[in-house]
Length: 232
Image: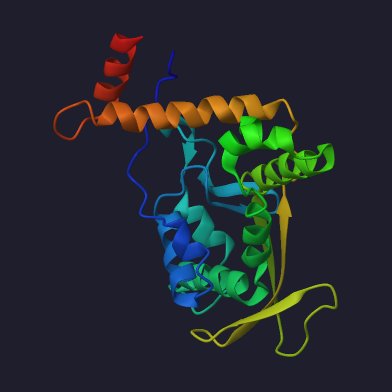
């Protein structure tokens, strides 16, 4: 039985390849796309409260309050009227300067066989227990890295006065300087039992694409679901 797909307000133009490109302009493009359609992938907090972004994938759970976001960053960025665009530029600058996504990508690439390989490829039985455990552990670490969150905090500062525990970024558009911290959260290692769930999910994705090819034209999600239910 396939779970029903949740409605979204619009299709996002965000491309992960832009975010992980290592190029400042493409990172900025990705951040701008995430802001335009945040869903549950992009959030802005002020004093611990969510002021922009989404609470989940469904339309009913989306919170988009751009006016509150603009008000909250007035004191962070000037001149007036350019705060929001400059803030997105600042986020992209921090991601680019920190190189933090390079570390994330390196960790995600510990999954060398994908779920089908990690869960039951026949050649694993010919490996030693140590080698097999290394493959499984690598997959679970990579799965954790694919499901974590990146949090970046900012504070305005004077040029050359960055805090010892912070990194430093500047905005050319406003000639302002900022301290920032970037770190990953939600890093609890995925349990071994989760591999069964990942395998079933992978099979559903494969079945979805196979079934899409059996439906004439350009099928909608509802048409694909109806086709799957009919087959089951």
